[in-house]
Image (cartoon, rainbow over all chains, first blue to last red; front, side, top):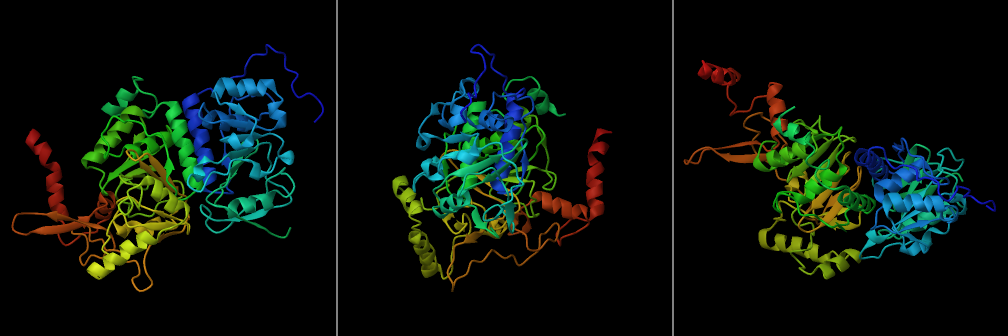
Length: 210
Length: 309
C-alpha cells in the first residue's frame, strides 16, 4: 500500500448503479445462485455499465447492488475502507451499514485478497442458525492460478477443480477447516472480471499435487 | 400474447409482483439454503394476494428467481390444468409477463405442488416446491426451540422411533407422503407432501431444488447432484409405491397414478398423475387399456365446429 488510493475530488459525482435495476439484479443473482449451486463452475456476471470507484471492481459492485441493503452489514478490507468514494457508492446504492468488525458482517468485500484476514475472523453462524454467517466476496480473481484444488460435495457431479488467485497464504487449509465445521462456516465468492465462482461451506477441498 | 399478458404491459406491478427489497431478502435466504443443503432458512415471508396453502412460499421463491427470459411451468398434484396451477400460472403471466408452458422439457423454472415430473429434469432447470409444513420433526416435537436444537445436534432419534412405531403397528413403514429424507448426510428434511414414489428422484437430481414455505416462513434447498437418502432400517429398507396396472390412458408403467372414480357402481380407472407426461405419450401413439379409440378423439375434436354451423 502506502500510496493514497483515493485521489478523487470531494465533490466527484457518484457513478451510476444498474441501468436496469430489476433485470440486471435478477441476472446477477441467478449467476451467484448458479455459482453456489454448482461449486467450481464459472458463471458470467452482468456488470454492464457499472463503473464503480476503484478499487471496487464492476463484478463486485454488481454483487453488492444485487444482494446488499439496509439489512446486511458489510465489512470492507483496508483498501476499500480507505476509499471514501467506494463507501459513498455503497452507501448510496445499497444503504448497507459499513462495519469495522468482521464478525458483525453479513457480507465482506475484499479487494486485496492476498492480504485477507483469517477466514475464522468472520461470523461463522451458530449451530442453531448457521445461516447467520458471513459471505466473503474476493475480487480481482483470475482462474488460472498454478495451484488448483479438487472440489467434491453437493452441487458437483463427480469432481470439479478451482484454480483461483490471488489468495492469501495457507488459504486452502483455512477453507478446509471452514468445511469441517459444517453446517457452520462462511461462503466464498470469487469474482473475476466478468466471471464468478463460488465455494459454499458444504464443498470439500482436496489439495492435490501441491 | 394472451389477455393476462396484456395486463402486465400496463405496468401495474413490479416485475413478478414482489418489490426489490423483498426479492433481495428472499434471494439471500435462497443462497444460504443452497450453501447448507436441507437446512431451513428463516425468511420474512410476505403476505401474498392468495391464501396460505395456495403456495405462497413457492410463489415468493419463484418471483425472486424469475427473469424475463424464463419459461414457467406450474404443476398442482402433477397436473397443469387444476385450479391451483391455473391460478398461479395466471398470476405470473399477469405480474411478470413471462412465457408459460405445460411441457416439462420446455420450462426453465417449474413450480410444483406435491409432485415431481416423471421426465428427468436437466441441469438448466429449477424446481420450486410449495411446502405446507417444512419441519419434519414438527408433529413429533411442537416446540420450534426444541426442533432447532435437534437439528443443531443432529439428534434425529425421534424420527426413527416414529418410523419404528409404524412398523410395530402396521408391519411396514406406513408413511406414504412427506417421507423424511437425510440430505448430504446431515439434515433431515421434509421433501414436501410429494408421494414417497418421488423420493428417489430428488437424490442426485441434475436440477436445483428450492423449497418455499410461506406460512411457516422457511426456505430450503437441495443443490444439484446431492445425496438425498430416504430414512429406513436395514431390515425394512425404503420402498416406493408400486401399481399393478399401467396408466389407463397411455399405458405407462413405473409412473405415479391417480385413481379416478368413473361412476357410482365402483367403476374406476388409474391414470398418470403427471398430465404432461401422459399427453406426450399419447401423442407419440401409446395407448392404455382404457384409452378411447384415436378416431373417436378425432370426432370429438371437430364437434365444436359442427355446433357452430
